[in-house]
Amino acid sequence: GDGTTVSSCQYTYTGHKKSILSLTFLESLRYAVTCDGQIHCWDPFMGSLLGCPESNRPVPVNTLASSPSPSTNLLVGTTDITLRVIDCRTFQYVNEMK
Image 1 (cartoon, rainbow, N blue to C red):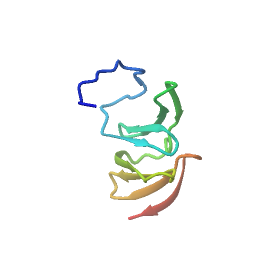
Image 2: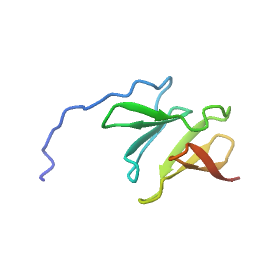
Image 3: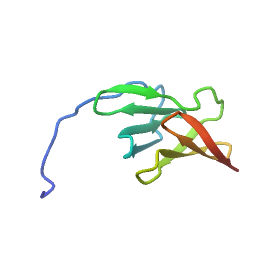
Image 4: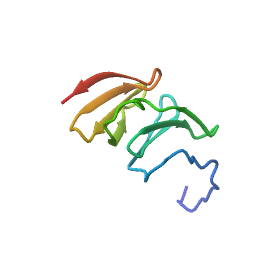
């Protein structure tokens, strides 16, 4: 297209308690992933929260990035200078690098 198409909002996720620091779309699972210090995985098409990986960890997340499809992994950077890899199918971390 020519870039002039306008669409209406389908859903507004309201589960954040703080300002959003990072946002990515995990194409293989069609998840929107955002963080406000905590990770939120949600379905932007159904408008439902799917999970909050590492919600029991006290170290805040400040950045995230999705791996290219068909991977289901999410790379997460925390304030303790650690990079974690999370499998978004299980919401468990599978690797950690300091």
